[in-house]
Image (cartoon, rainbow, N blue to C red; front, side):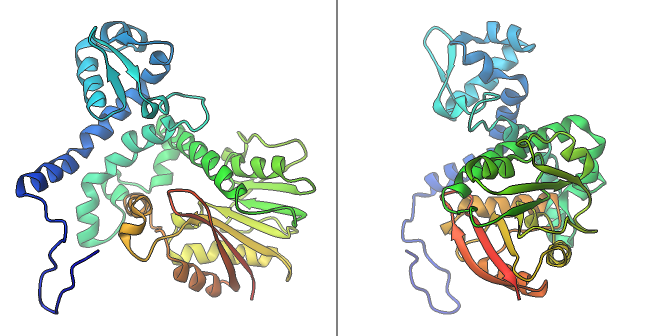
Length: 347
């Protein structure tokens, strides 16, 4: 609840904290870069995979992961302070429930996400102020080239990014399938579907639906999809496979500004028949920032990395209309990222 104000006055929070508490909170927020860096160290070294086998001290852990015991111990203690690890009186460390999510190859793993955020995304942060003042993309200012072009030239960073996308797609698949029935479609074309994580989940859970995975050649070459799934390489700005009665765009439109997003939607509109359905799985911005902090953080991530942004329901409707679609309904999911399924049809 916000205290009422009159024009020209400064709003006063109703939950005023002592100045010392406010300073401590702001200092903690400003130290966020330390936590990101420490998490990145743990993710890069595979600390959680070692600790998953049992508690151990910094010296033994350092030998396992190829690090120096002294510096590693200091990083581990920061992660203890943040609730990621537990430190025992004998000097050994163990995983908390949050720490267990740093393991690799486990359901719900966030290791890829942490590696991408700490190793790739964070490098653009120093240029954010310049981008806010003067425009442009922070990543391009910091690294000298567009985000996706940069990844193509840096295999280690590309691998971290792709792992983070697989992690996110796996979580999104469960959220989407819990609220949306794909059973009424015959042929589902996943445009920009990456390695096919979401499409595979849909096809596995839904009988009678055939799938087409469409993405760049270097991406679909590593796809893992059910037998019988058609895999097509191409550029969604140039065209998408025809013949689907449903076209799926998952975590695609938020990468692009309205002009480029409209081009992608137009290619989908051209490929589908008059009875086709467009399905967009994306985060949706709340009207008030306090109602969806995770989505707000995601929106600023896009400000760092690309020309895209997160959008409100109204903005999605306007974007769809500009490409020849009518937004028919918005189906929310339980995702903390404000993930929704937007269903649209040809206008």
